[in-house]
Length: 260
Image (cartoon, helix red, strand yellow):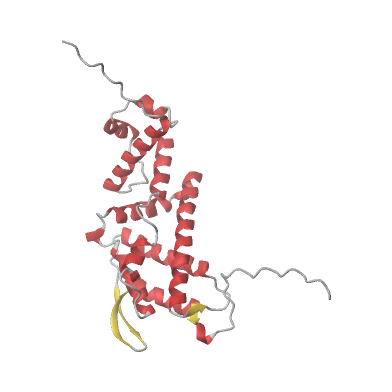
């Protein structure tokens, strides 16, 4: 009786092994949460889950600490969708609302719902909260600082485009010398601040808000704060038609014309 020759399983490259081990470790972080950074995620445990030997890992990382720094940076950079995806879906997924206030209220409610206890098991929520917790300790490592800045800059760029689109749609323009990037940066700080409070277990308040021409409504405190930012940074375009847009590119200089 003859047997077919066994086909050797192709060996993983070092990069494939790196990605496999980081993916397993990230899953552990998202399952267990962030505790003193990622110090509770041990390389030996990750290797055991992957069915690999110690040598496979130490050809990639110098030691446990080197592995954990790369893991923390990977968690910070991780996204499952674009930064504005969930906001766009809830705000204008079925068409833009008639009033800007509805954009603000819906977007703020969606943001705060991310941190509600009943939603914290969702992958998107776990990734956001884990990344936020690790970013708070980024000063401990140049690698984490770089990862944090990459995440921040990408979010700022995408939300700046989204807010610019929304304000044009509702006939608003920036007040004075403010820029859209400054507004987006303030929004990010406000949203992340409330997210940190959620990590601390603090319940997010709702308030009753009155606005001209609208009945009293229940708003998140975050939404009311955003409405205040909007009033500070923007005015109706009709009120200031001659104002310059600080984020607009300056027109190209015309080439000098030859004298007649």
